[in-house]
Image (tube, rainbow, N blue to C red; front, side):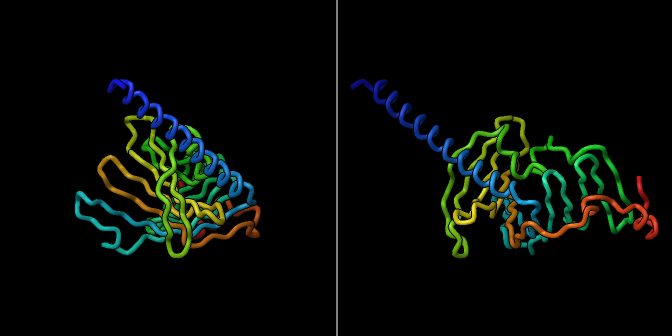
Amino acid sequence: MKKTGILFIYLFIATVAFAQSAKKAKSLLDEVSAKMGAYENMYIGFSQTLSNEEAGIKEDDEPPIKGEINLKGEKYSLNYMGNHFIYDGAKLYVINHDEKEISISNSDLSDDDGFIYPSKLLTFYKEGYTLEMGKFQNIKDRNIQFVTLNPIDSNSEIIMVELGIDVKTKHIHKLIQTGINASKTMFTITEFKKNEDLSESFFSLNKTKYLKDNYTID
């Protein structure tokens, strides 16, 4: 058989294998999205770490950054990096407790830089990425199947996203973003609750309270 024929066979096999991997990856993420999206609401406690092999930064060089978020559909209340973000589905309120300032915008956080924001956590994979099955790991007695997402946009600030899925619960366990500067930002879910009893005003801003506490509202 000519070399060109052998090359064609290899290429064909690789193409079929990639297509099957992409199909399995999408099926798994669709299952995760359907299961987690069916909850009335979710509470997620998480930790964030950073590493960059090229810069000599290891994941455990600094203590992890802690955060927590409540999600209900596209609405969320996020405490992260000393700020409180509230998105009510139409407006975003960013509360800076150190400066006692609140900024208001008529849209969600921008995703122009390629980062994944809370309101899109369960749906972001559906557009703008090619999918394939990634590594399988046992992490602290939990079987985690990773799915690798590669941005289609060549100008994206993110070159790869890896979603770690708990095989048993079909919940997201870990999210890893690799940037164009080779840095890896890792988010690990440390606590999860579903269908909490939340008040009607949970995802809204109590302006009276903050004005009383001498916050400035833009």
